Image 1 (tube, rainbow, N blue to C red):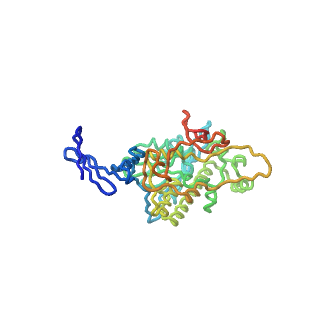
Image 2: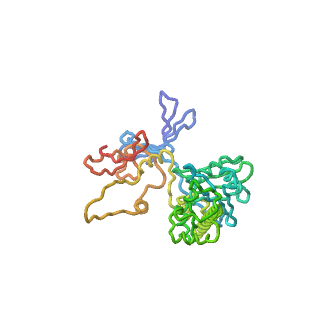
Image 3: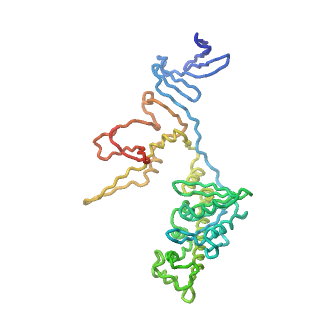
Length: 433
């Protein structure tokens, strides 16, 4: 052991020498201020060594600092527990709108709780604001505490009307999650008693039309309704009379229209009754679809879909509960995440006007999943470094910031980079350095 002091300092340096490393303690007023270790990298050259201070490493070659390393404390993705029982605490809601003076206005709302249907029609209220307020307040009861309310396409116009009403409610607080311009979840919490509900967009969980979903889940299909008839400026909401003509129905064949018209051969067609009937049917169909889908997922993976607002979040939960196992996938955050994210630019695309003879076209499907499955990706504990790592490692592996020179004679550059144009970020494939 050596104890070294300097004439111009009150500090002492306590050095303990071992075969492959030295332990150095810096002492001041009899207390240890700093402890670090110097590890020999070359037994014949004492100026080539690695200094470790807590989670930092400094690599010296011939007395020159080559690399700085920071060993980051890494959190890893953890498995989640499966659900012990199937839960189906949810409602479905549908909002029918009409276009008045180029603006969409709700004129009917229906709600289905699995047993009963509730409907609200504009003619029965002073305006659509009152109608929607009464409809929303009807489900703000203890019976529906912690329920999820699904609307198919909530992220678009339905969500706009709904959000305005929810924000006007007294004694309630709203939390909402929005991503890429889509409303993921709207949580409504009572400030006066223990109650909350969440509004969800079922289209984000099952991203196809309600009509096609009904076919896929083998549920009685959607009914027919003359959407264009409601938007006629001369159509009144209390209309009773002849069945609207075929031209007012969207994507309906003449045969289907004739079969629909037969129902009203000896009775009057009533707009209010048909709107409520159609709106209620949509709610019931959506309820059956969600109920079936939740059963399928629970049967396969023991997860309740109501815990996840989107299909990607459900897929991620399935992976974490069933397939993650002992894989150590780090959760990357902060500057390291931002640096790595810069390397993701999306696929390179070009547009051509095709011409020629005997042309063969080729495409690669699922290239990202293939690469993720077959190619190695850095995992494990994260080490952040600064410097030229090639000076100490002939075959480094990880994410690196490098300078690349693309040949000037490339007709189709392929290396992408992002630049800030002053009007947003753009991805380009430049030549040169």
